[in-house]
Image (cartoon, rainbow, N blue to C red; front, top):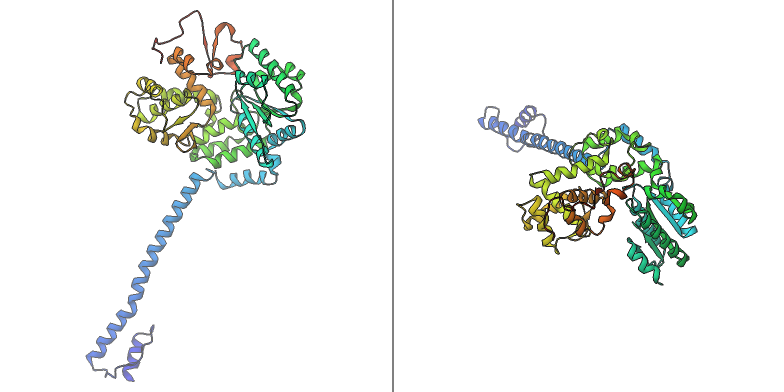
Length: 450
């Protein structure tokens, strides 16, 4: 029992049972005591390093989680700013934040007609698509038809399809339309509306055309069902801004710039030639830091300069983007990885990217997703913002006007004879068209056509 007491006093932390009756003079007693002490401390020596390692791992994981969240969620600014932004809208209903949609929906349901106007990039086509989706959701069967050119309109006007419930006339009118063309188009549109009174109809019109011919549109009764996307209120703009920032990756500095310049976006913008949604979407998708205040001085010009930078660059990561954007623009707006027009592609690569290899196309396209391109189905892509197609067409036309005019079905929307060009077109539609003198040779380079 004495040996037991000595061991107990020597190691007060643990209680060991007495199993060996040893004397105090025994060397075995001392050795056993040291051994037990070492064994008793062994769990401590193992536990402490494990706790330290786990703590370090937790801190590292937390850091990367926060970093990933800040880059891929909203790209939110400091907490106080984000709370203020969110709380202001949290008190408003979804209808109040989407007033343009609700107003257009009301006109469509009550009067079967709605006219959507706005400058390029305001989302006229997007709103039309949203209205169609809403009608499809609320109706068991809805057959719609999109009409986007005059010849298609004439064909349908001569013999309207009986099984169509909703017509969408998108891009029938455009900025460079001559007076004679406009009069002819509007006359056919009026006749068509009178022939399909019982059908639903959505019509999109550029702001420039609407303002210029407001009297004629009013006489046709279209002003009574008119939605102007240039006149969105601050609540609706803020909602769009939040949605786009949530949808896209956004450079943290650009996110801070957006919130710092919030009043410039939500108030009356100084820029009048491109819509609020297009500008926000462009900034959200820029992969490099950009001074937002500088961009807002003339965003359309900055976008045009961006295209020229891609065009003039000798770096593969830039010139490949220009080639792909050009190909899609001149290939009816799509790129199908499994169905490439090699003749058209080689035309652009020989001029702008001689070292291009077709087997690298998939990787080049992948690098453009989220910045310029959108995948609409497996292996099929389109340009995310329509404004890019306009700027790319003008850029290619400056290089070879004859090729551009011959190989782009919508070239009359972006090429106009000097004598026919309205004096205010440079202010109303800058960067998106070029003037030509039909007396002179069309080709600027003399390149052979495809």
